Amino acid sequence: MPRPLALAKPLPLVPRAAPPPRPVPPLGAPRPADAIREPGAGGAENFDAGLEDVVAHSKSGIDYLTVALAISLSIGAGYLVKKYSRSADESAVAENEPFITYTPLETDRYPGMPTEIPPGRPGNLTPDQEAKLKEFWQATLKVFGVLHEPNGSISGTSTPSTAHISSADLKDEGSGKKKKSRLHLFGKKHHDSEGDADSPAISEDEDKHGQTKEFHKALASQTPEALRAAFWSMVKHDHPDGLLLRFLRARKWDVQNALVMLVSTMHWRSEDMHVDDDIVKRGEEGSLEDAKSSAAATRREGEDFMSQIRMGKSFLHGVDKDGRPMCFVRVRLHKQGEQSEASLERFTVYTIETARMMLRPPVDTATIVFDMTGFSMANMDYTPVKFMIKCFEANYPESLGSVLVHKSPWIFQGIWKIIKGWLDPVVASKVHFTSSNEELEAFVPRSQIIKELGGHEEWSYQYVEPKAGENAQMQDTAARQKLETERSELVRSYESATVAWMRGEAGVGEKRTGLAEQLRSNYWRLDPYVRARTLYDRVGVLQAGGKLDFYPKAGATARASTSADDLD
Image (cartoon, rainbow, N blue to C red):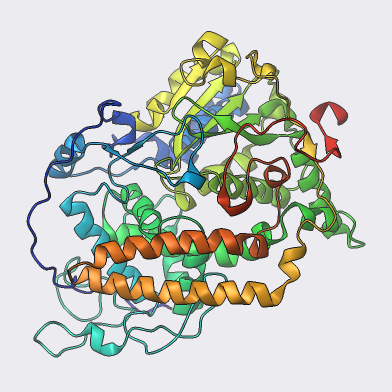
């Protein structure tokens, strides 16, 4: 049974003058959908209870399976939108936060990329938000064992031995007393007395996916080093601050709730799904090998995964009007029972992780297009829907820009009136129904709407099979270890600079920014050694060094391809 937890007092911060106001760029005022919003009460957290109501409705003539799909789409739309209320002061600040101009790196640029940083991201934080980020880093580094154990390293792809900040770094200024250990993360700030504290006070209504339980399980079953490794492995090419800020925004800048969400996510990635050491590392080639296995269960999983990717049940292609990568889901291609539950989950996580490879600041969200053409009740399947909702709400916070439900059946439109009553208004506002090209053009330029949906882009999904030797670099242990050692040193430097930044030392902010860029550059050199090549590497969307081309020229791909038309 895990020990009680208490949050250490924040490190003393050096007062500083308020920053000058940032000018609003000429590209326009802040868009409310991108700002931190205050959700209303109700609906989404009562998902299972709602389904019971749906079954009752079905007895009166409404098909509960169709309703379930409606729930999946509408909740999927808001899986990353905050479901907790904000204070009046925080809301007032959010409404006045401007977007600021951002100049992307040359390797990150692509046509249609915006040039504004939304509020609450690295480079566009209010003083209060920066203070929350510092507090979150302190709590996170305590969980990772960085703030009280001597010596050690971490590569971001393998488990480190120990941390590197000494115990002296934890002394209260002028007191000579050490702060509490990692297992006492929630203290006076959230409880009435010093000493051992109770479990994090998150209500059952707020903790829809049982993350408090997962948080305690993670602390009881995983070492600080393992959680630390899982975090830096998830960072990849992202800005480390950017990753933490996703969790803070998703939990309305409540550090305690954000920490519970972060730690439970690290546990889910490393212990439940094995995202980085299996799904990403083995990739499509690994599933292709599994499909040839003599073990029946392994062979089934491999065949089911490859079947989904070959038919293009979901795929990534192009960008919308806001420069966000688009994921298309062809609902008609899913048939209940055709694939195992495990392969459906693996394919879902694989698609999300591949989409993450296409996010570049200031773009940090994606658009999902549900193509409902030809939908029938045979396409409805509740089990993968529930897994997708949990993934999106609990483990990939603040990653969705919008959801477009295109050409849904008339009965789906009617059921939406019921579903909308269950949902937070902010969640519902991210779902848009389109039934024609004209309506779709409000979100995607006609020239970028694929021909399959009635647009002008002469493009169709074709799966290019893995090529022999495409992952040969993953066998070069010496080269990988050299890059991992470099990354280990960069991580240590970044964590040390972060401790100095939390204390308010002058000039450390610029140093952290430089180290974050070095980590990004290091990841793209390390990438071929730790991530199996995907379809999008083969066709030229993902290129060496992290360069993107969402619309590569035809003929740049291998010829061994498969489309949905080739499959029964």
